[in-house]
Image (cartoon, rainbow, N blue to C red):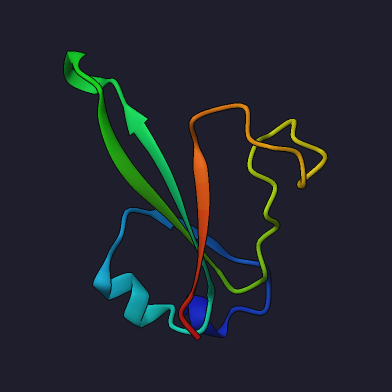
Amino acid sequence: ALRSCRAAVVVSGYPSELYDELYAGWDRVEIHTGTGQSGSWSSRTEVLWSNRTLNQQTALFDLEPSRPLTNTTTTERTDHR
């Protein structure tokens, strides 16, 4: 149903072969981050799949994309088209 949707769609999740297959050809962005759940820090990768090109703005208040990152979250674009 999402593949035929004409509206803008963004699916958020974790790396998944199933989602990579379902949303092949969609824009895919990996966000390397971490979590402090369970009392200890561990890294994780979150993924966004979108039927529209996603902006490379790396932070909510980062209005200048060319500005160096000031936090530890990095964004890596992966083109699966």
